[in-house]
Image 1 (spheres, rainbow, N blue to C red):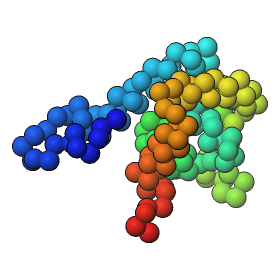
Image 2: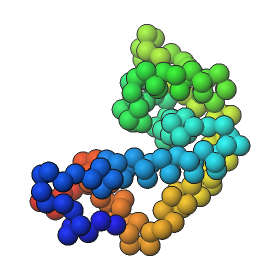
Image 3: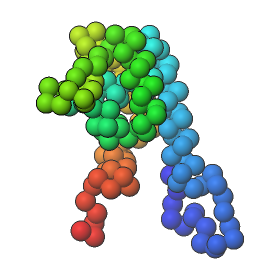
Length: 156
């Protein structure tokens, strides 16, 4: 953990290893390595997993809705959807209200895989947070939400 006194206060001192973006990237890389190891029997990537979770949580979604809910760009989500469809984990269908609109829906196979994956996902989160005590975990979750603009700020 970086203490405020450890942060450089001059504009000509810059240690990239102490910058928030670098540290977040390293933590994310560690998390992805844990995910890939623990989820390997399912052959799901983390982006595929979140896409299936969103479909389960929200129900049928358009591609645009998936982009918003997953925070994955349009080109990437298109490839994710194609791969999940090829595996029989989601299906495409016409929107009941607008026949021109294509909706993504979780298949029964997708639901079964998610049911099997949820305990693994909890273990992945646990291993990612292993070095944090319960209070630090709550603080991290709050701070990450705040950084994303989702948590109320103390100035509100």
